[in-house]
Image (cartoon, rainbow over all chains, first blue to last red; front, side):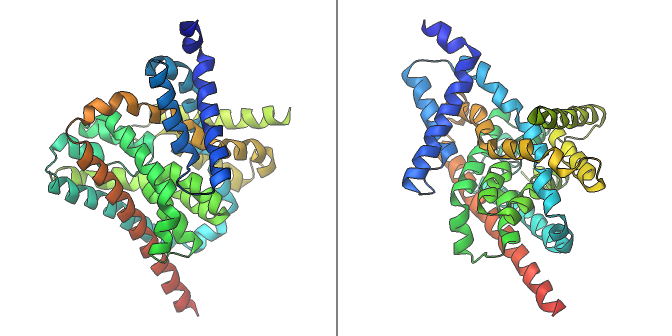
Length: 230
Length: 119
């Protein structure tokens, strides 16, 4: 019975959606950024898999179809971008300088901390693409010889963290301009940051979705300068 | 039928993006090509916004859901972090804070600088 149930592709998808709805419910109830629906659903599903001795592979065999939707969904981010096109043109200087600074900060801070913790080359290059979108990050990690699965997890944890902490960080550093907020979210936390930026407002969301692609591209270009440092 | 129509436009662009990715040698995912294609198509008026808006916004709304399957994979990749778990965690947390603060502060500075100059 259990085998039948857990090996069905419906299982993986259903439990993912249920977990996410649990997260949405708790968030609505407690209204705290700690009750991040994504984080809650991930933890709840992990707990479920462990408690009921379900293999990750059988969960993933169904749930992976949700992941397939990521490409069309990311493409749809062009919609908010299009709606804010004028704003984008008017602020192109701030956008370019902001994202460049952010990508440098990302690669540079990963380098310094890797030095501090004396990571080996493989561990270092695994973390280098941590702030950019999973799809590009995987490519970079592979290219540089990193541990791809760890890169993926680092990227997702970074995203969740950015998603949860964004509002706090913005208020600590007095970042009040909607454009600057969106750029900060997109550059540090890719699509997950963008999900949050969409909740904050249309301008934040558009800026953040623009950043997913640009920060990824800038990282592809700049990463070769950094990968040889260690 | 409306959503079906919108869905087919989105999937057609996705497919086109996959084809472009296949023929170009860069480590750029198909989603980025697709985003550019859709942006150009919307801007040129080839695809009117309302022909894609509802389904597109639905996709964006449920996007966090799509990260769950890969993230739950942490259950199996934990082992590869043996011995470096804490340093890696600290690195991830600290760099995320630094990147969002630097990006936000720098871009806000540029925005305000430009605004002051244009006055």
